[in-house]
Length: 120
Length: 112
Image (tube, each protein chain N blue to C red):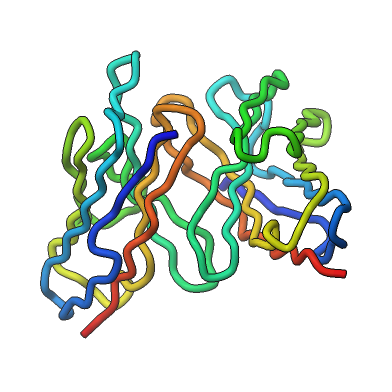
């Protein structure tokens, strides 16, 4: 059974960089058939797609965050990571890592999510 | 960006009765490969979203057959034939036809 697990600091200071890692177990991140990505949800609000990476390193970012976002992959560790720079209180959210299947086009697996609070 | 608009935003339903949620996109979700990448997700409080339906009408593994999806182009519908207590929560439509992927605002399903 595929599992995704987010890890990283739960508290980040304004203007600093948020860093999260997603560890994939029960499946290979190097599969041709899947993309890996990050989605966030501010408390009490809806979902926002942040970006997606393929195991080759090709990335796609939400233009609203593009200048601040970097997503990378480490196939040797079966992990992918998110960095979001110059954070503000508006970046406070639950961050989910996820898998999108190439054939179905669906985001079919999600991590449990991790709350990141931006505060001094 | 493609804007996804859901109606209603809140839906009180009686157990055992049907429910329906609509999702409209600001432009066609038909991809150049001919597929329409419209999904429906369900989120219970404190839980991550869970995939219900993909490519308009395909139920994901383990999803009960009381859930069904339909539509085409820019108009889509999720139907629950008989609402059960476990169906409460927020339902989202999502498109992955075009970057950036976008979501509807969410529809809160609650029991009367």
